[in-house]
Amino acid sequence: VQLQASGGGLVQVGDSLRLSCAASGRTFRGYASAWFRQAPGREREFVAAVSWNTGSTRYADSVKGRFTISRDNAKNTVYLQMNSLKPEDTAVYYCAVSPSFNRNYARADVYNYWGQGTQVTVSS
Image (tube, rainbow, N blue to C red):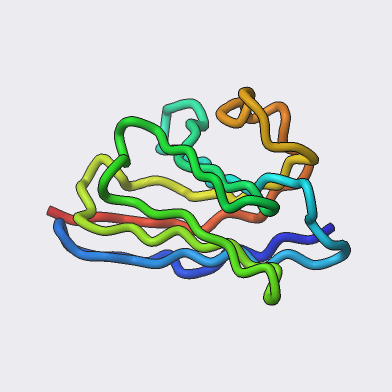
């Protein structure tokens, strides 16, 4: 399985960005995809997750109402639409895939596959 993340960049406070994560190598029925992020000097943190089967979503409290995760089954691609960006959203964003979507969706160790990361910088 290979994950290719893209869409990061430098934006201003309040701007929007859409990240994409294209997956290849297998079908993902029953799997979950997620976005994590890691800022300098901080641990990697959960951002959002989506079930490939049902489209059910979960979000970190810090991004609820601003970020939307979605998936396109036909394209094997997961998206993260980020609106109303804040300086504290600055981080490297990673996409990941887990073989199941369950209550552990926010734990990085349940995700087997990771993309290479894409930098998001929000300037004030």
